[in-house]
Amino acid sequence: MSNEHNMRRVTAIRNGTVIDHIPHGQAMRVLEMLNINKATSVPVSMVMNVPSKKMGTKDIIKVEDRELTQSELNRLALVAPEAQVAIIRAYSVAEKLTIELGDEVTNVVRCTFSNCITTNPREPLAHRLKVVSREPMALRCHYCGRPQDLEELIRNLL
Amino acid sequence: MAGLITMDDLSNDEILRILDDAERLLPVAQGKVYLPLLQGRILGNLFFEPSTRTRMSFETAMKRLGGDVVNLGDVKTSSVVKGETLYDTIQMVDGYTDIIAMRHPRQGAAQYAQDAATVPILNGGDGAGHHPTQTMLDLFTIRQAHGKLDGLKVVLAGDLRYGRTVHSLSHALTRFGCELIFASPRLLKMPAEIVEDLNSHGSSVVETEDLLSSIHDADVIYMTRIQKERFADEDEYTKVAGAYKLHAKNLEGAKESMIIMHPLPRVDEIHPSVDTTRHARYFEQAFNGVVARMALLCNLLDIEVPASIGPEGGDA
Image (cartoon, rainbow over all chains, first blue to last red; front, side, top):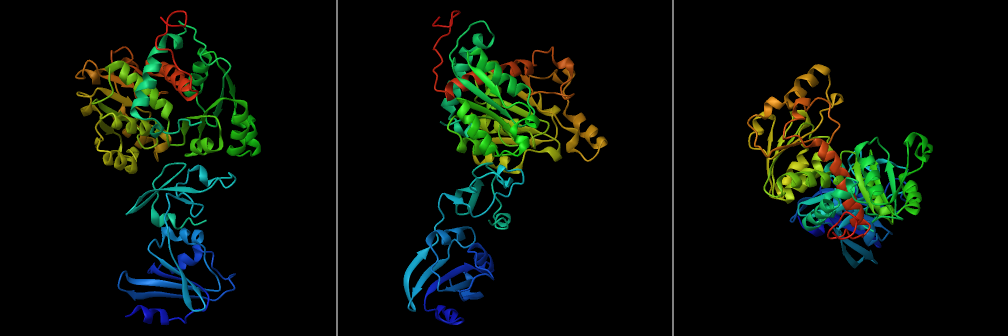
């Protein structure tokens, strides 16, 4: 099935952001990480489990009338590192962005270790995870040094 | 200024240089020479958890070098009980002192404190995390006995799961090419991520539940206390802990040069009969806490330890 066909599953948007190549099943989590929820007033479309040559199956999200920023998108590095992002203006792709995983993931998720200093909500600290490996992705807490289980980690979204 | 949060903050060369400094500071630690290298400097002792040896040896180290110490005191009567954050406590003590020694029940607290402070932080233990100043005194004790660190066969025994001492030490020994044997009950095994880490650094680690069969060719046996509260019932504790006790009669086949260490306090994992054998080093080890911490205080405060220390405190 062609990419065009996938895209036509939902209508083309005039202005906004299209996030393509989200690993299948992760679209809901991506929405959560972008703080897109019932309080969001702009139209949002989501397709899940559509065929993809590159990934087998994938999810796609379209957010109308909102241009997501690079730093917002970088939050997705933990769940959709390969995602491709297009900013749409007047029905055309105005900009293409890729998600960048820096050396550190800051204030996206909380360390999973129950005795880490970061579990004290009163401490005015930044939640910092160091990227120790990209392929496969491996993270350690900046403070306690514990390696993080990625599945467990994404349940700890801030 | 950078402190000492984990052993990764020191290169092998830096470790050896600090151990050399400590060696020269021995007569100062013993009170035979007065050398006020840290006169006018103040150490802040922030122990949010009980500590006897670490707190006292930091205090002794500072005072032997002519420096002064201020203490947080009992957390139950300090501002911590009023709900002060660690961040605020550090901001305050950072202004009062030149260097801070700290123990905290939460893992990562020392790194957090270092991020918040302008003075160096010496991590005196954070949860089950790191205890690098203990590691330095352990390395000092091992080198004092064997004249080297590299290539030794070291048995770490007892509670390897919760003991932060053995976590920091095993990382450091690996860096010096030591062969490690982890002898512990299954429930208290070294955490898998630490074993993986050590293996990924090319170290040779053997895990066993049999302490006694590891004795004969060991250069160092590092004992730790098995705590009753780690077990569901007392019978299970008695059964398991019994296998991790040393008695003088267990040491008959040991190498003459083998040393037995323990971070103390011990309960009954080392029988008093061991105290009078040539192998016992745990009391010297506790004393070495002073000299190792003296060397660390000087290094982190950027104070050079003289190349030779004579009876008058100057060059010999």
